[in-house]
Length: 128
Image (tube, rainbow, N blue to C red; front, top):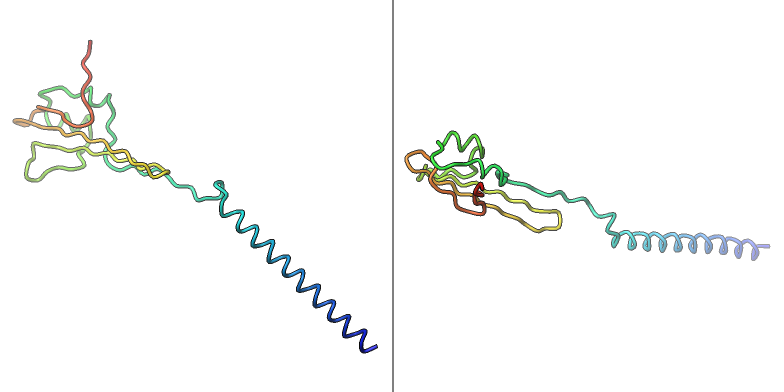
């Protein structure tokens, strides 16, 4: 009788360990499968910085406009040179969720507080 009890307890503990091993193995496979799933990756947002300048805004600029008029159309410049107040720099940067970066620049030059020249990535379109 004693021999039957000891073999019974051994079998019960053996099946519990086997079940624990199976559960642990299933957990490892589940974690490994989730690690390579693109749907379970965290969402990354696109990051915009600076002044968003559109072609329509640039087309509204005309030579001879005052600084105040230019600021009304384009907004406050991102970089205002303290040594040269006659040059305003507008910079726009977009970093997409896949890591690619896009940068656009617009430099506005004034002569006697009037718009003189635009340089950078935007050019005014001529009206026909």
